[in-house]
Length: 317
Picture 1 (cartoon, rainbow, N blue to C red):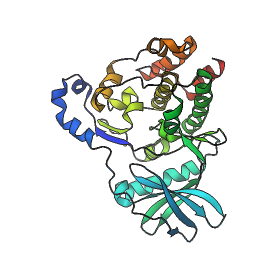
Picture 2 (cartoon, helix red, strand yellow):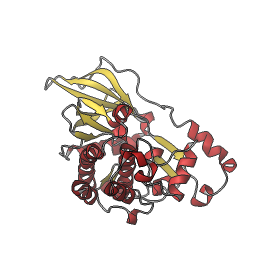
Picture 3 (cartoon, helix red, strand yellow):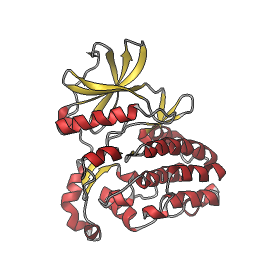
């Protein structure tokens, strides 16, 4: 299951301090962020490039549709994600997504889904990935929350490893959330969905993509700097991992509110209760508190400074 990404025009820090009655326009926009716009039509049964035969839809995101498919040349299952020009915002975005796919195809890591091919065909843009047999964390969370600390650690260490590799290659995932983390049937964790990731080398070619005042991501897992529309770096991903680990251990998100704007405001201005205080009956170890709360530092400099540093703390906890 691939959940959709949120695009919201953000308030300034000053605006976040105003009463809710002054945010009517933003709230109205937030209510609409689950809508799909310009996604490809049904391509089930069609063949791209005389090679990829598309099967059933496996998931939908804010910009594309993922199909379980057959690579006829290799006689292997693959996943194919299709985009249209409308869903991607025009030619420049298409060129960028293909450049990003090319960069990702050069990364070979066991905790990152492998990008096999990409291109344009029959009026759509496509990205071909490994077909993953397994379930995403958001699906697993419906059955297993809260998780035991040892189980949560084992999963998150793999998430850290995949993100560390992305960061070494100048990529910030920017939408780290349970729906974008697959646990394969063999127990390997895989990061997926790089539609809104930030690529350092492309940013140098196209300055200004990290526009202040706009949030693109998933509010429940966004860092305070993203939530307030400020510039961010790889440490935003560290915060998101902290949110997921908190959710795994406690069985609930660190910030729960009646609307999306309240959630944004809470993460900008407050820190959550530590897991052991929130869930005293679960006997959560002190080291879990320390690691999770450090990852959830409101300021980037208060967090772990790399995914490798966080993984090392988890391995020795």
